[in-house]
Every structure is written in structure tokens, then in C-alpha cells.
Image (tube, rainbow, N blue to C red; front, side, top):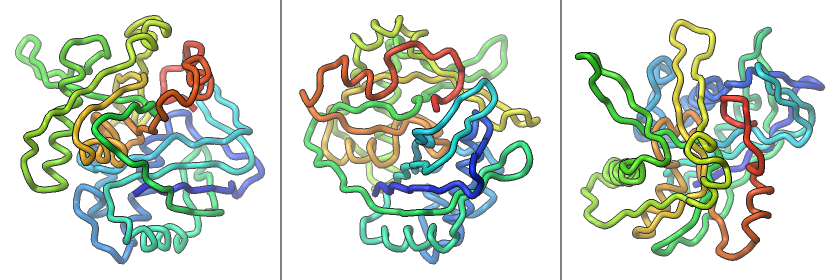
Length: 291
């Protein structure tokens, strides 16, 4: 299930921290908490979820999309309507309940430097789901994070995979396999192939050119940084695996708005047009989720 929210700022101009992922995650979880439907723990269980490292929630959301916006080193500001996409592995027949839950709360609050920026829910609608076969190309709407635990001098460290590492595609495939097993409570024995667009990566300047640094809980004692990457990706597997990638996102920390995908129609546009429309034509210097 994928929903599209059109939000209207309460103030004439809104301004929120540039690293707003965790703030937006907290707001969404707090709204879902009031739903009359009891979700699986991997969607939302209780408000305590906002106080732990949120790596076990299988929903995702996009960046805030506002045509009249401005990005600085510390803030994201703008005026007028703002679009937000929300996606989760929830049955379509529950969509009206989810929509009603968000509408009943009326306002989405995101912390800013002086308190909160408030956004009214102007409209909420369910988007039609693409038809999946055994192969689909996607564009990443936000950085994908995938990691593994390593040991250095006897200490545990978290290694974030770069897009050019030989293990990266396999790690994302394994992560998709685990999501399938969590959702369906059954082992997945089929193939999953993940392939990044090497031409795009080369155009962007290689691995470092597509790398993104994401800061979570910025400025707090619990601040931590996640390193990921953005590039088009093709996934080959059974339709249900592609559907999970679309609904949940790929990689880790999806509920922080990471790893969200959008489908790409085959041969619908020239590659140069595709790059321009997804704001990836030039290198971005700000080390955060692009807004």
C-alpha cells in the first residue's frame, strides 16, 4: 500500500532541520499508534518505538517535496503545499482505516528550532500499485543503507557498504529475503538478483559520487550517522519480492525514510531526461538526505 499526502503548512513559511528523518519518523509512528487497527510489530507497535534505534519497522516514506523550497546547510524551508509519500506492506482493504487515522489527527507536527512546524492534511489518497513481473528497474527516492558488523582491535564496528563493494548487492538481496520471511513467516528459497546502474554511477563520479551521509537525532547525545548511496537499481526475482522492495524499501532503516523506491517505466525516457527529472544531474555537496 502506498499513500500520497498533500500537506498544507500552518504558517505562511515553514522551516525544519535539514536532517528531519527521525523527526518525521516519530510523527508518523505517533499517529499510527492511534489507529483502531492493531498492526504487526514490524509496522508499528507503540510509542516507545521512537526511543530505540528504529531498524525493525517495515514501512518507509519519501522526502518532503515542495516546489517552493529552499535548502541550506542547516534547514529545509518553503511555502505552499508539500507532498509526502508513505508506503507499507499493509493490505489494500486497510487503506481506508489508515487514511481515516491520519485525517483524524488533522495535523502532522515536525520539530523545528522553536518548537514545531505544523502541517494540515489537505488530501490523502491511495496510489495504484504497479504490476510486477520478474524484473523491474527502480530509482531510489532516498539513500539506501546496508551494513554489517565487523571487529577492529577487539571492538565491534558497523561497516556501511559502498555501492562498488562486491558484497553490496548480495547484502541487499539477503535483506529482501529477510523481509519476505518476516512478513510471510516462511523461508524464501527463490533467487534475488540486485544490479546497480553502473553507467549512472560512473557519470556521478564513482562510489563517492553517489554516497550520502545521513545524520539521525542531530545535535543530541544519541546522534549517529549512516552512510548510504543513491543510484538506479534493477531487481530480478519473483513478483512478491519486487512488491516488498516497493512497499518496504530496500536496505536498512527504511522507517527513517531510507531506501524508498519508485518504479521506472522501461524505455519511457532517455537516460539524460531521467537523470534531470530525479534531480541527480550534478553532484550534491550537502551530506544529508537530498531535499
